[in-house]
Image 1 (spheres, rainbow, N blue to C red):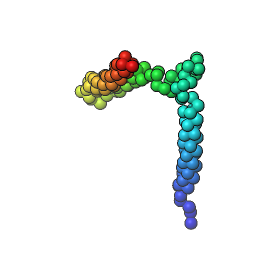
Image 2: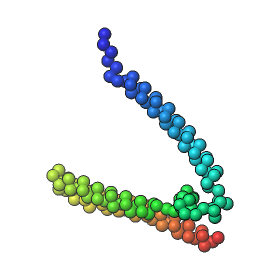
Image 3: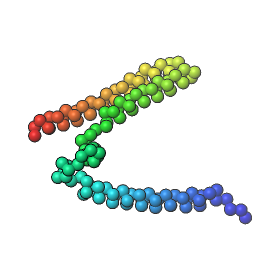
Length: 133
Protein backbone atom coordinates (compact mmCIF):
# COMPACT_ATOMS: atom_id res chain seq x y z
CA UNK A 1 0.00 0.00 0.00
CA UNK A 2 1.18 3.48 -0.79
CA UNK A 3 1.60 6.26 1.70
CA UNK A 4 -0.42 9.31 0.66
CA UNK A 5 0.43 11.80 3.39
CA UNK A 6 1.05 14.64 0.86
CA UNK A 7 3.72 16.18 3.03
CA UNK A 8 1.50 16.65 6.07
CA UNK A 9 4.14 15.16 8.36
CA UNK A 10 6.74 17.57 6.99
CA UNK A 11 4.38 20.50 7.54
CA UNK A 12 3.67 19.35 11.08
CA UNK A 13 7.38 19.03 11.87
CA UNK A 14 8.20 22.44 10.44
CA UNK A 15 5.33 24.12 12.29
CA UNK A 16 6.42 22.65 15.62
CA UNK A 17 9.98 23.87 15.09
CA UNK A 18 8.74 27.34 14.16
CA UNK A 19 6.55 27.36 17.27
CA UNK A 20 9.51 26.56 19.49
CA UNK A 21 11.59 29.17 17.67
CA UNK A 22 8.85 31.74 18.23
CA UNK A 23 8.71 30.85 21.91
CA UNK A 24 12.48 31.26 22.27
CA UNK A 25 12.36 34.59 20.42
CA UNK A 26 9.53 35.76 22.70
CA UNK A 27 11.47 34.84 25.86
CA UNK A 28 14.63 36.57 24.58
CA UNK A 29 12.58 39.68 23.68
CA UNK A 30 11.09 39.82 27.18
CA UNK A 31 14.51 39.41 28.81
CA UNK A 32 16.07 42.09 26.58
CA UNK A 33 13.16 44.45 27.28
CA UNK A 34 13.59 44.07 31.03
CA UNK A 35 17.34 44.70 30.79
CA UNK A 36 16.86 47.76 28.56
CA UNK A 37 14.16 49.13 30.85
CA UNK A 38 16.23 48.92 34.03
CA UNK A 39 19.58 49.89 32.51
CA UNK A 40 18.61 52.54 29.97
CA UNK A 41 15.20 53.97 30.89
CA UNK A 42 16.05 55.57 34.25
CA UNK A 43 15.07 59.26 34.19
CA UNK A 44 17.87 60.13 36.64
CA UNK A 45 20.46 59.23 33.99
CA UNK A 46 18.97 61.45 31.26
CA UNK A 47 21.53 64.25 31.67
CA UNK A 48 24.45 61.82 31.13
CA UNK A 49 23.45 60.88 27.59
CA UNK A 50 24.70 62.73 24.51
CA UNK A 51 24.61 62.25 20.75
CA UNK A 52 23.12 59.04 19.42
CA UNK A 53 22.44 57.64 22.88
CA UNK A 54 20.48 60.81 23.77
CA UNK A 55 18.43 60.46 20.58
CA UNK A 56 17.80 56.80 21.39
CA UNK A 57 16.79 57.74 24.94
CA UNK A 58 14.36 60.37 23.61
CA UNK A 59 12.98 57.87 21.08
CA UNK A 60 12.38 55.22 23.75
CA UNK A 61 10.67 57.80 25.98
CA UNK A 62 8.45 58.91 23.06
CA UNK A 63 9.83 62.44 23.05
CA UNK A 64 10.41 62.08 19.30
CA UNK A 65 7.33 61.34 17.19
CA UNK A 66 7.45 59.93 13.69
CA UNK A 67 3.69 59.60 13.31
CA UNK A 68 3.25 62.83 11.34
CA UNK A 69 5.77 61.86 8.67
CA UNK A 70 4.41 58.30 8.60
CA UNK A 71 0.84 59.53 8.12
CA UNK A 72 1.87 61.84 5.28
CA UNK A 73 3.76 59.08 3.46
CA UNK A 74 0.93 56.59 4.04
CA UNK A 75 -1.61 59.13 2.74
CA UNK A 76 0.34 59.74 -0.46
CA UNK A 77 0.90 56.01 -0.97
CA UNK A 78 -2.74 55.01 -0.47
CA UNK A 79 -4.00 57.89 -2.61
CA UNK A 80 -1.70 56.96 -5.47
CA UNK A 81 -2.64 53.28 -5.08
CA UNK A 82 -6.38 53.99 -5.28
CA UNK A 83 -5.87 56.34 -8.23
CA UNK A 84 -3.78 53.79 -10.16
CA UNK A 85 -6.21 50.96 -9.35
CA UNK A 86 -9.14 53.10 -10.47
CA UNK A 87 -7.55 53.51 -13.91
CA UNK A 88 -7.45 49.73 -14.25
CA UNK A 89 -11.24 49.75 -13.80
CA UNK A 90 -11.85 51.78 -16.99
CA UNK A 91 -12.04 48.53 -18.99
CA UNK A 92 -14.53 47.01 -16.55
CA UNK A 93 -16.94 49.89 -15.94
CA UNK A 94 -16.49 53.62 -16.47
CA UNK A 95 -18.91 54.48 -13.64
CA UNK A 96 -16.95 52.26 -11.26
CA UNK A 97 -13.76 53.98 -12.41
CA UNK A 98 -15.13 57.43 -11.54
CA UNK A 99 -16.60 56.24 -8.24
CA UNK A 100 -13.31 54.68 -7.19
CA UNK A 101 -11.27 57.64 -8.38
CA UNK A 102 -13.41 60.28 -6.68
CA UNK A 103 -15.03 58.55 -3.69
CA UNK A 104 -11.97 56.45 -2.90
CA UNK A 105 -9.74 59.50 -2.63
CA UNK A 106 -12.36 61.44 -0.65
CA UNK A 107 -12.73 58.59 1.86
CA UNK A 108 -8.96 58.27 2.20
CA UNK A 109 -8.68 62.03 2.77
CA UNK A 110 -11.37 61.98 5.47
CA UNK A 111 -9.70 59.07 7.28
CA UNK A 112 -6.27 60.70 7.24
CA UNK A 113 -7.69 64.06 8.33
CA UNK A 114 -9.32 62.28 11.27
CA UNK A 115 -5.97 60.72 12.15
CA UNK A 116 -4.26 64.12 11.93
CA UNK A 117 -7.02 65.62 14.05
CA UNK A 118 -6.30 63.08 16.79
CA UNK A 119 -2.59 63.80 16.50
CA UNK A 120 -3.19 67.56 16.75
CA UNK A 121 -5.36 67.02 19.83
CA UNK A 122 -2.44 65.10 21.34
CA UNK A 123 0.02 67.89 20.49
CA UNK A 124 -2.27 70.59 21.91
CA UNK A 125 -2.87 68.61 25.09
CA UNK A 126 0.86 68.08 25.48
CA UNK A 127 1.48 71.83 25.01
CA UNK A 128 -1.21 72.77 27.54
CA UNK A 129 0.20 70.25 30.00
CA UNK A 130 3.71 71.66 29.64
CA UNK A 131 2.42 75.21 30.27
CA UNK A 132 0.64 74.10 33.45
CA UNK A 133 3.81 72.63 34.96
